[in-house]
Amino acid sequence: MHPDQSTALTRALHHPFRAAAFDMDGTLTKLSRFIIPAELSRTLANIPPNIPRALCTGRPLQYITRQLEHICSYAPDPAAEHARWWIFAENGGIGYRWNPRKKEYEPFYEIPWPSEKASQDALEAFIKDRLGWMVTVRLRPNSMVIRYPNWVYFFPRLTRAISRLTYKRIHRLLQDMKLEHDFSVQDSGIGNILIPKESGKGHAMLRWAKELGHHVKDILVVGDQPRPGENDEDFLSGHHGTSFSVGTLTQNLYPLPVLDHRNRQLHGPQGTAALLRRVEWGKA
Image 1 (cartoon, rainbow, N blue to C red):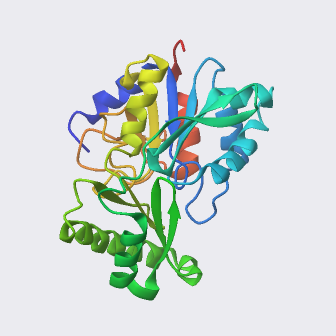
Image 2 (tube, rainbow, N blue to C red):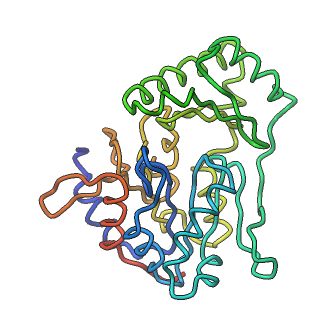
């Protein structure tokens, strides 16, 4: 533990947060299940109504809205609950807010794919040439997702090992192509996502803070993968919100751990639920 972390943790648990943002896989769901537990959904729906909250993930909008329906179903007023949630999809590549008139989420910013640097088709061809049968590439408007054959996901440790190896190989590919200043690759533990450099969950939090008119430190951010190259690295760095990890930790001051009454670290959805029961909320 960082020598100043105990003090920072005490201070953070008494900070009047004005907004909250959550990673999904490994934070709201277990990596192997992709289902938000009912207890956590209920806790999320009971965050004070004046507090804006956001989902920040590499997943596309369609997947995220299905999970939001599950959360909102636990709220006293499910329709009003939707308006309290913001969405940052494709690892911050697109930000959405609720349009109450249309009853749907609409983009309020979007980071375009820098095709003048390298088209998605070209990068897909290079990645498949280097990695071959081992990967499948899914093209999205603002990102590229690299995944593996379905049988790999029956073996969580193997999945994490392959995901890390793939991250390193794609990172080297970007360096070889002299594109490391234009794109970044991030490891989720179940795959990799390739995004424009201006994208990312951390940048999304800065845009959200400006949109809300809050200081970024007034945003509680919760994720599970803060190590270099992982997809919560900037999100949980401490520069883009007051950050907690319910997964791995680093040697840095942030992210802060979530601890039980015996000072044992809590992980995954259980840790997120415990944290939300302890934090304090301020004015919107």
